Length: 523
Image 1 (cartoon, one colour):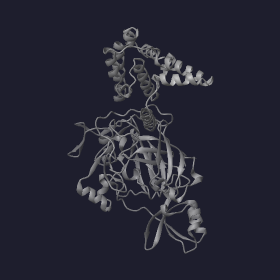
Image 2: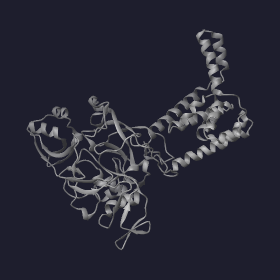
Image 3: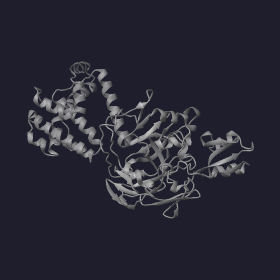
Image 4: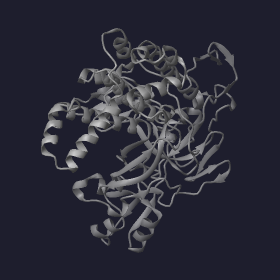
């Protein structure tokens, strides 16, 4: 809603400023207040065909069209300096009004005059008329200093890249092995933000092309305020079980940041990372808005309304076994018996990335079924590990102490409009969705639940939620550790891998067989 309010305010201010400006160019003032007509008259004043104003109604494209038309309108009034151009881009209504009340005169449609000058220049070039070319170069009223050409080109490139990254496609790199086998460490992805619905940014004051940290100085790259409420445009397709998704880390609104990774507060008592403990002791808690939370990529294993359960490592949704990814991985103790060399392991796709630890000199490797079969055939001894223990398992409640990463649930994933009965027994599962993701005041008094100061025993959810898991099942921090992924946290759909570095390092070479590989497979 805030996004549309912003667009409405800009439109109203623009229309008002054009109301004062149009008469200077011989256009009736009232035409500035008629929707559609104002854009057509604006286009005529700069020498653009009225049909081109249709781009003003196309989301994303309209930003570029608006800025270009604003710059050309001011040039039609003789305002051609760098400052005028910048003001036209960042504060068009203000410079329109200033032009309306100062001594500026309308000089004619700038694009028409530019095209006429260009036609003369092209004619001189074709006729090889050196005198005419030299004369036109000297008289060229559209020439800009080299520094300005560079500055404007760089600005436009950053501006365009920022908008493309913000609304359409963004490049990501896989930093961890949680999806190893399907999406590997060192894979560089293009992610479409349109497939699941373009989401407008909530953060306004930020450094373009940076997500949440500034390199070198290692500081946050944005200001939390002012902010807008995010809005999502209609999706091109629905999120399906089995498809990989990119999303903002749900619990990443408050984090402790180390040189290796981010931790949410709950992990302080569950993790033995000395750097994390140091950050906690110093009170270095960082808060982040929704669109500046860390990006994660996992596979969607359940959608709103589904009941999910994991039994002996197999995921079941609504009582039916979900087809496992082809490259699904688990941890194994592996004793090679000196029968497999490093070259063979590399050929089979087994490397240091797959090592999850060492116990008594025996390595623990994350392996898929094909790798397990090849190692067994080569004479290696393998033992599948079990994910025992409840430490770090969502919902971090003693009532669910029997839940593990391999045997989990059942758990009901909320859907938009779905009403779920809540009590003190299941509140630990849903409290974060109710209080944090949906912004309600939630309290428990005398074993009674109050939402927005009203006692309740049920709750109707405002958005869909998803259950995300990594294909490297024993080495993935996912919904089993921090719960549901809200719909407003969805960033986009992986499209394809455009580059892949071996073991995450370009210095070790390129995985040519992965370049331009489709990344949105459901298995």
